[in-house]
Image (cartoon, rainbow, N blue to C red; front, top):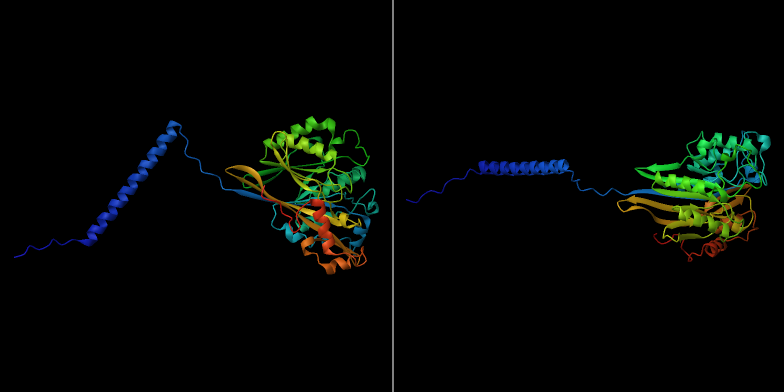
Length: 394
């Protein structure tokens, strides 16, 4: 008689195996916890985890230059509306975190003081439309900051401080002049500063020198201290200087001298204004090896000036990254834009959206303007290869 094979209770065996696995996993977790606790008690730090990358996108445009014909073109039955200036640009700001504009001219609350060149003053409705378009950083230090005296400065600051923007370059008090303006996103802090070369010969009253940040040779030690403090409080630093020679498409010695100073003090990005024309972009490396990305001039954003080179502006686009390797400029570009006038109305287009039909309708060129002529001027000034606006990855 053959011996019978023992019968295996399969459900019981499966349960036993499952329990064994659970016990083993639990013992492993206990061992790991004991090891972690032991390491903590012994002062051995846990292995650090690399931080996730944080990206800050910057978009900046040039001179919001309010000549009187621009102001008059936006008059309505109930006041002024400047939305049309920015309607074609607003979509290109939507994806940016920092959206900066150089507000070349000041505001005045008294309509009798509205004026154009040489001493500008316009309605606060300009600022309303700037905010509506999406701009959230305003550079207000320019050679026209004191065109309307203390009234213009005070009216302008009061307006901007009531709106959701970071106001650069002008200050109500000496204490405010020492502040470090910052943009913060998920632990990534970008500091921003704005200075002008001068005030068109105007002089701020004694005791009010703090009201406009001015590039001053004698003031360089104080500026270096403020920059050092900004560096200590942030991850990267941007300076917006109002500098250079009007209508010169090449940077001058003054700009290069201040660039050297800013670079030596650790400024990461410079975005310039004032010449009213575009100038090139450069990755400047100083004697210490420190790199500063400099847009020498973004030209006019909108104005009543009347030549292709003066109506051709630029939007600086910069991607900043903070990750386990540090903080850096990841990539950048200079995208051209153009002021258009037709039917008594002004507006700005990105040049890639500007058509030959629009160009022929421009009121200042008698049907002779073409988009090719504008692109040619852009490539001539910037030195970029034809068809390219973006720079290689930094």
